[in-house]
Image (cartoon, rainbow, N blue to C red):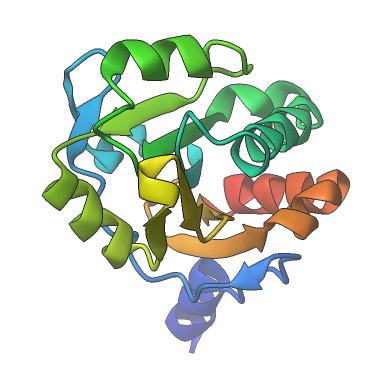
Length: 183
């Protein structure tokens, strides 16, 4: 009986999170190139809470507003902020070169990791994360889902936030703090 109680205490119930629950299954891979051309694997961020966002650098409104909101959320975490990473995956790899990603993402703090790859790679990764998008106006812009996924330090999907939820910075920061304490 003691072993069962100990096991339950170790697993324990997941905390109630503000975002839309994702069940705690392992996060899909993000095996792409970073903005400097190096190989990137989500596993390299184990031990950190990771906020994953799919967008593109030519976006004039939602993408920069989302990244700015994430910066405000992370700033609310105090010392825990050093255990959080933001990952920005481009949906427009033809225009979002490594240099374009570095330049764009440098405007945000903490600076997100920028990921890119071949169009087919990006399409496969985006689908595995449940992101839908279409190219509009002959490639001038993209219509895309805009949500941020929270991956816990063990690499599990915990919750996701739509754009309007990101305005509730204290609640989002509370979720991140909760998953950091779950380890």
